Image (cartoon, rainbow, N blue to C red; front, top):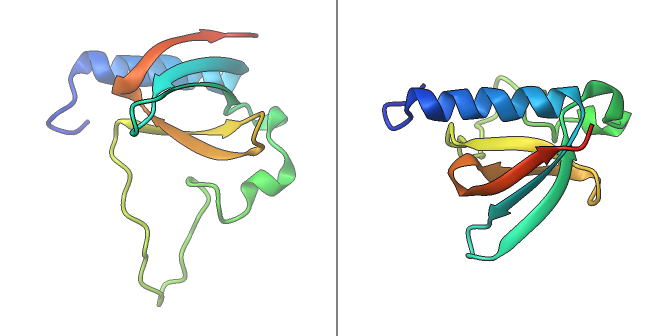
Length: 104
């Protein structure tokens, strides 16, 4: 937990991440440009296509030991998920979530 996060923030992260690992969720959040976005997403292994586990997956990406990493570390408040409509990894900032619900 970072210094800027509260126990409530961590509880929310755990709650939504557990729901995503269990099935499909619809998350409505505010994008960095100020627009609102609704996303159907998941982290449930059985719903992820095999190609989702290529090096583009945040938790599976391992840069070569000799290559410098060019990705900026994501803040603890970001959560990477599989977008079911775009069929790609996307992320959202937890403090910008307006509402969410588990579909199943």
